[in-house]
Length: 54
Image (cartoon, rainbow, N blue to C red; front, side, top):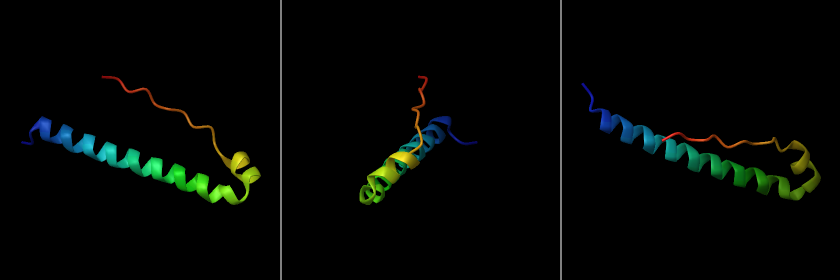
């Protein structure tokens, strides 16, 4: 049987990795749209943050 704390630590690490990837993709998307500012604003979806519960 797996230790729940090890599983939790692994999941938290995966979550941090995915968040970093999302931030990198947001930066890349802004940089790609820098050539055509009108297209970047029109194509940018409205993003919402998820509230985390303790």
